Length: 108
Image (cartoon, rainbow, N blue to C red):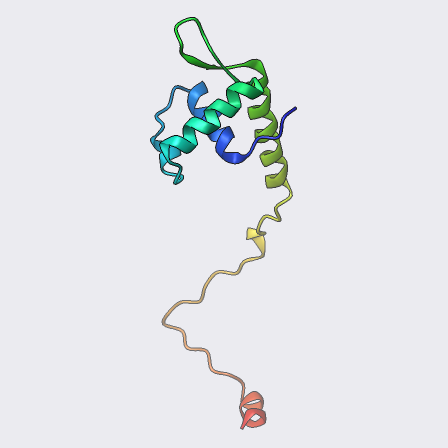
């Protein structure tokens, strides 16, 4: 298994789903950088050209995508999700809460 970074995964997903490269351009990559990444992916065996010179994702590329997605899913499970049942409802804006007099005397 070859280590692939996030930009390469996004390019693999775009090619697999026949999406526009405007997504990749939105990441700030130039066309020459995109071409170099595609060239590296072809050399690594994640992409290949078919008989009509169309780029296709290979089985190794699909494995890289699923491996990356599983790592992301594992990280999301490590997040501590907020406990919504512990929240109290906000007070009505018409209610004014004053501090107790003991706290006022001590702070002066």
